[in-house]
Length: 426
Ligand code: NDP
Image 1 (cartoon, rainbow, N blue to C red):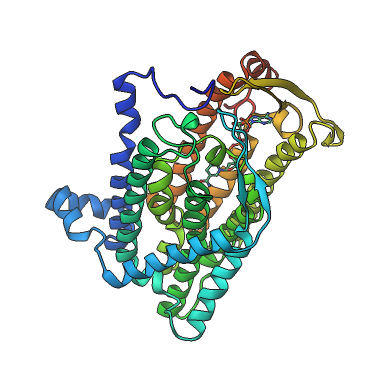
Image 2: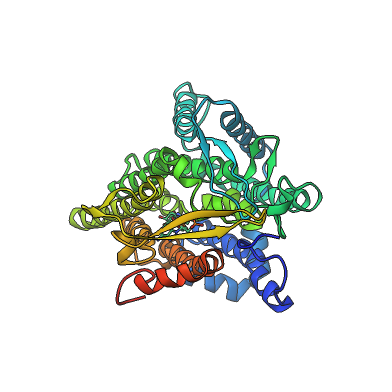
């Protein structure tokens, strides 16, 4: 039993049932988003009229994603290709965060070269005529079906493996923290190579679709794609840093990560280019400039905050932050193997300003991505709304975990840095 980390027992049935509702609600929300965008031009009022006249199940049955053999085979090849790159492409070895049971795992972080090879390979295929550059939007229904199918399958495999043959049973609660098959890490693979890798491929294919259908690629779709690409490249370029984020260090691998990265991320995170591919908009140049610049500022904040923490921890506090010696709280925590370890909580620079300025940067970036579409259509703001809920909820979850890991040192940190996101606001 771990001394901190995910709960395994002690929760009421009611809380567990409530926590499980997104297992049904998230796929439903995704289905509604898919149908609204593809059948009703992204218009919720039109969807509402259809629901009113035809009823929910008839609408779902008529417009849901459909199985298509060729698309499913193509998607299966994509997964195998990504698995081969993940496992065999040379790359540096990186060390992950210590788990609640005291394990320190190693990873091959070859994400950036895998991203380059993937995109070059797809570009070459398109160049040689073996693949339509607009393959993704033209086969979106079959792809969404396949992504969901594999997402549910991966969730079932995660559940069964976690119960029958966990990789590190001491770190397994209801689900596994770091499921592996041999040295193949399912969590990093699913997050990075299935989820993040698909993001730019879907975007670029929608740009190609707009070009094929309308004879041009509009500034909006290009600028959104640039912001998305910066974010995805940052992820792969900093894959070693990513091992120390909550997703890899703390989240268990179950439905949310498995289905979420196979199906939810590719659909939700690319809503803007999916829409723009079919409905080019033309906001003014000044509007686009402001939205794009805000996005770049958000990205700069996101990277600067994350780098500050990573550097101070790497150098054990022996460095400058904003030109002054770093201020931090030195603390300890226990792992369930009985060992005590040292850590530090940075309390200066961005981390003295608020406890999650990195989330603020991410939110600025998310809202800018949506703003670039240049419409008040609610569906086009769904990504930013989702990120706001996700990150605010994370702030609260992180506090609970921090307190259980560091005890009074965490309370001391919260007294020194009282604001979660924006000083004076929250
Ligand atoms: P953080 O990078 O803020 O990591 C939080 C962890 O860092 C805590 O659990 C704790 O872990 C440690 N920590 C907390 N406070 C301090 C401190 N003061 N000093 C040193 N260490 C501290 O959060 P996330 O992992 O959630 O996010 C990483 C980035 O990824 C963020 O920029 C976020 O915006 C982004 N993100 C993007 C998502 C997307 O879908 N696009 C989803 C989620 C995140 P411990 O002490 O155990 O090491």
